[in-house]
Amino acid sequence: MKWAVGIAVTLAVVGLFVAVAQISGEIARQSTVDEAQPADIILVLGAAEYRGKPSPVLRARLDHALSLYKKGLAPRILTTGGAGGDPVYTEGAVGRSYLVSQGVPSEAIVVEPEGESTVYSTAAAAEIMRRMELKSCIIVSDGYHIFRVKKMLEFRGLTVYGSPRSLNAPNDWRERWLYVRQAVGYLLWRVGVTV
Image (cartoon, rainbow, N blue to C red; front, side, top):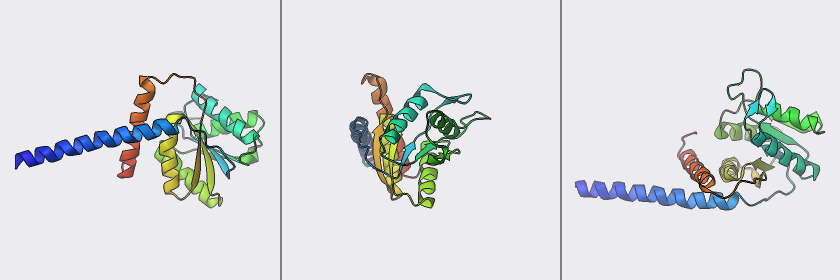
């Protein structure tokens, strides 16, 4: 009987590794595809801010969203992200301020200022879009992030196009590690665990 349990556990572990490897491959493929096309809104996933200024990662995401907005691919931009430990600023509000400083009219920007995680931010963004009767969005984030965010928003009935920010980093082990982390996060989300 013990051997049967051992085989079952081994098969489960092997199955998990295979699933993570397959999803990591899908994440890697999605990370290089720019699907940007006309949509109702551009959704920018938050990243760190420093005392009211966007971090280099957040700024790159905002600049990419700005480029899509200027091309006329969507009439609105939705910035996301909570305080992240900052008692004064939120990632979403910092994103809004930056975009306004770049010439985007304030009425064209919607802010989700509460998100503490990708799961929370996507759920809140989907709710905002539902209330505004918006059905489609262009996701702007880092490439490794697009697959999981798309799946979360599609689960909520939205049409989603991924558009990763430009990234000059080489395809090295750190990038592949990010794919694996996102694959694990995606699998945990699929079984109801939020990370």
